[in-house]
Image 1: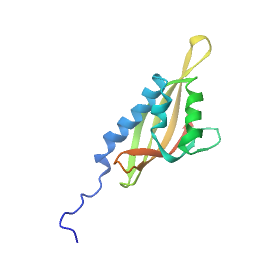
Image 2: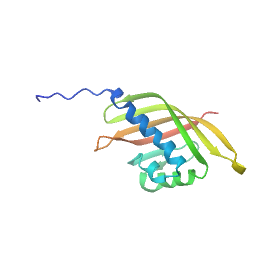
Image 3: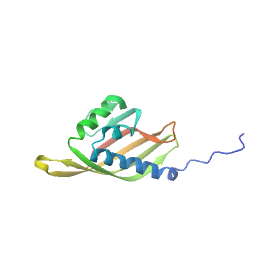
Image 4: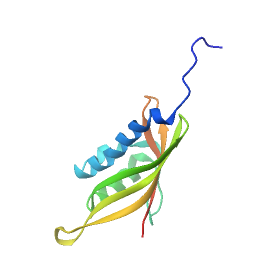
Length: 137
């Protein structure tokens, strides 16, 4: 028995942290900063883009995906619908909006549903362990 009891986990205590992390996707794309996007992922992350093969591991596949995507994805916004889970693993669902570059300077907006699974890191922050989305047709 310990004299000091650990405070029970409440997902609301980390909601702002996850929302701020989500805003970094937008910043990374607007600033064409692949390192910022790469920093959002856990070392053993799995990325499941819509209609594309799954990507495992933060080191090369996910970095390469975002580097290539920056040519066409110019911004994205996340709107969280739910956040739940445990201290160690959180799941977030929501809707996103991506601005996709078109021919001759045109752009289109694409809406999608997403799920992110966030894993607690040793430093007390969260990084994405699983990232997936599906376009809204």
